[in-house]
Image 1 (tube, rainbow, N blue to C red):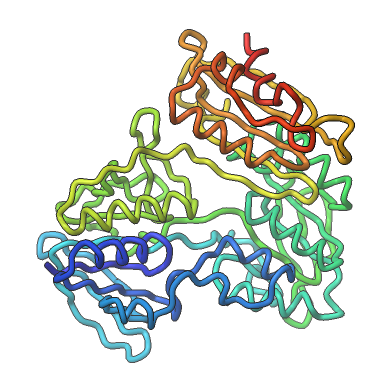
Image 2: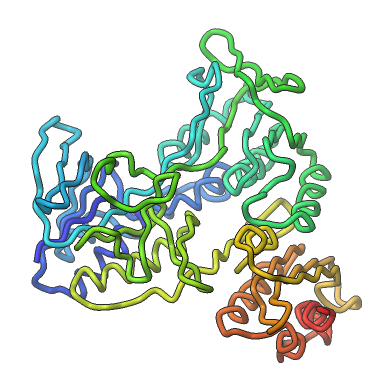
Amino acid sequence: MRILIAGGVAAGMSAAARARRNGKDDGITVFERSGIVSFGACGLPYFVGGWFDDPGFMLARSVAQLVDSGIDVRLFHEVLSLDAEGKKIRVRNLETGEERDEAYDRLMIATGAAPIRPPFPGIELGNVHTLTRLEDGKALREKLASPGCRSVVVIGAGFIGVEAVEACLHLGKDVSLIQLDDRVLIDAFDREITELLEKELAAKGVDLHVSEKVTRLEGRDGLVREVVTDRGRFHADLVIIAVGLRPNTGFLAGAGLAAMPNGAIIVDRHGRTSLPDVYAAGDCATVPLVFDGSPAWTPLATGANKLGRIVGDNLCGKDAAYPGSLGSACIKVLGLEAGRTGLSERDAHKKGIAYKTVFIQDKDHANYWPGQGDIAIKLVYAPDSRRLLGGQVVAGQGGVLRTDVLAAAIAGGLTVDQLGMLDLCYAPPFARTWDALNVAGNVAK
């Protein structure tokens, strides 16, 4: 069995390592366009912000470790095209320019996603950065350390943009955040939650602008100096663009793969694509949802690693199935932490699913223990069965771990009534006698 894997980051290396354990005699070759493998980009904002200094912490496995395990890792090799009928891929060695065909018995595509660079005039000026690769993180860290870098403009208020804002504030920069949509983190959280996060950003000194469109970047001596929008101008010594990602699947044009409009490869619970013996996982592909198995594009490291592991089994002839994604995700927003899982109200509305919601604001622990803070919880649930469909939590502490409780409750099919009586831990430093999750479940009408 000859197994080829295009892409050696999260999903690709999870699949390769799993396949190596399963298929002792199978040949496994990984083609990676960059010079590193097993890279966790989620740590980049914290590396840029100076919370840790060794970029090696973001690498889960070294090339040497993988080679020692019997995996043929070929760095600086880019997959150019797929011939599914001939069961081969075209690969270019980026160091020599040589191209050759590589035959496969089974193929996995794990080529990830790339940052979108909008066609603003001035986008090619110096000191304009994205933040998805290790090279991006190193360059940004160096630029932000310059005494001349005082004002930073972040364009885009998704996860990467908001995390970049915190990194820059941590380094003492003046930060403006510009968002085209009418609120931050719009794809992850409902309005009740984002309002609290926006208040936190503003309270900590972020110059936040929503419903504002960037029209161009202006510079001097080849470096960016201003961001111009439909409402005003912002001085910028450095610009971070974080307006979203696009799956790296352009090389598959004409191969016959079923895909979403943005190019994400559609896969089933086994990681199988629409082509025989071709699998996919990671940010280049969809994940099936828990509720109905429908494909969703949720570019998260958790889903990439889990579905990659499933693919690693199936590349070796097994029939493993991924139970499905809840889209669970979390973020630290300065002094707050926020988590979401399952369907948001926006998700349920778009899918045409009947739902009800409840939103509460409570306290995170007993008032006589120091540091009591606010906690807000939103639940989405089915009106008839009252089964929990989704949940979002924001708090100064304990918000993300409570979101994990909601993820388990949704996966287990619990109702809001069962959540209301769930036997959660209690001690004054951690919760009140009735935890805020209990309260949310009990007030759901």
